[in-house]
Length: 248
Image (cartoon, rainbow, N blue to C red; front, side, top):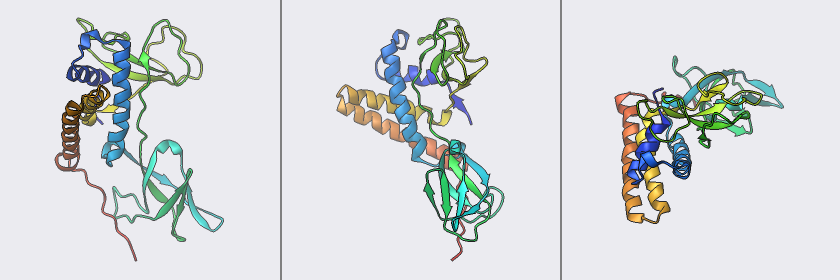
């Protein structure tokens, strides 16, 4: 999956909103971050983006006369159950009910299945990284790997490569922990979503300032960008959903 630096989204959004990216305050940064996080989840769950889907082979067990599949909730949102690997064979879709982390199959003869799921959308909530702060597990920061700092504005002479990172360690990080080294994980944002995110943030900003006509125009730009992303996936990339065969 191709990814984009969040700094690209941050600075382009600020420019569209008429806010100088070289004067980015923590408040402006938090505004773009929160709006982008909400839009990201909307885009993420609007369509079955192939880059976000996974297939997991899972056993079926008989429990109280039910054929059930117990799966790891970390695989994300369950979309479809297949009797075979749909990427390599003609597969049939299975009817199911999802209760908690248990899939109940409506087929008394079902054997092992393939679970098609979508990864969960990341939530953006971190503030600028500070060298003097010790971070706890699951803390999130914004860090510019280009300038090796938590700068919210472009640093002269350095590439701008700002992204969010989550601390994955089990104990406090200690001061000076660099997000690109050790127990940190970068949050990847699909490059396919970049333009839609930028226009979505712009539309939400205009709406928050009661500029309703400007918000409507920005929303139209968002819709066009989302359609373009779909076009890239369905027509240019040629990604299609496996054909569903059912027996009656």
